[in-house]
Image 1 (cartoon, rainbow, N blue to C red):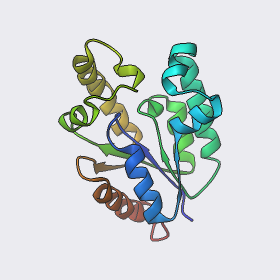
Image 2: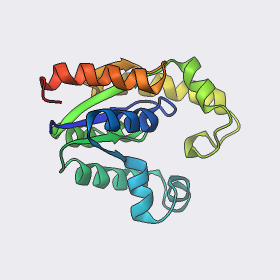
Image 3: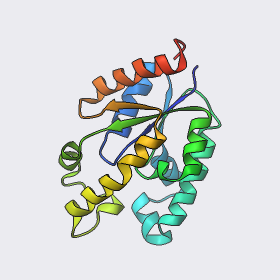
Image 4: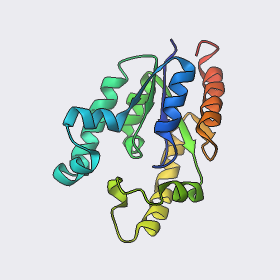
Length: 174
């Protein structure tokens, strides 16, 4: 089995949904980095942020990335902030390709409307914050990613695009 396919992108870009479809199509195993942390810690990401703070969560994220990337044949959906740390980018690239799920701000706002389980969106100025965070993070996602796909489409179409691009990136053995 070829190396891992690592999905990055802004919250709401479809990393988990696309990742599950991609794993099924490619015969890889799917792992959501945030869910791995939640299982290991026995609490939600929101609880970790509230109890221990963002820096503690980011350390947990790096540990989980290191553990997952010691394996091959995975699809890994990262959290929205995972590739903001250069150390994580290095770990994730060691045994895979990082793919940016590039969704427009309009698409993301629509997908995130009514979502209440995102720690960073628990604020009164949600829309302004979302726009500022998008402007801040998108250049970092683009810098970390080796491949980019249009994530404004349905998950099946996006996963097909990733498979095609990964095939070219890895060679025909994906």
